[in-house]
Figure 1: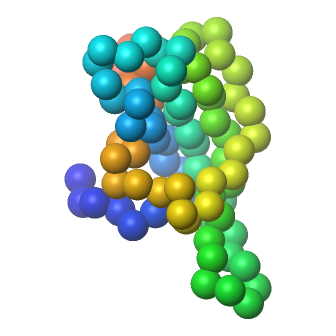
Figure 2 (figure 1 turned 90 degrees about the vertical axis):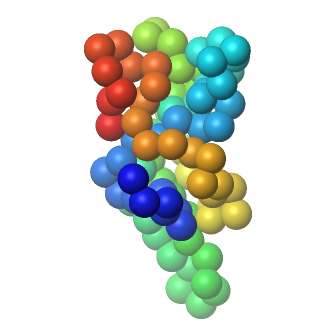
Amino acid sequence: MAENAFFEVGKTYTDPVGQDIYKAPEEATVFRCDAIISHPFLDLRLAIGWAKPGATPDSEYLLAAYPEASWSSAWTEGDKWRRGGAGG
């Protein structure tokens, strides 16, 4: 997978904390990007979608928005904690 410069619409990501096999799933965040919006005058982007803080099977997705400043290539594509596979 090529390294992305920002979230991509339609993809699901696990945050860097969630990739650490020594961390509990309750410490991970899974984010599904549904849209990317841009500020009308500034060069700022915002990823909007659904985040599941505490990536356990009974965690609920909540509306979330991440600015470009919070992006890190350490977010990995897929839901590491999804039952039955990598998700996405």
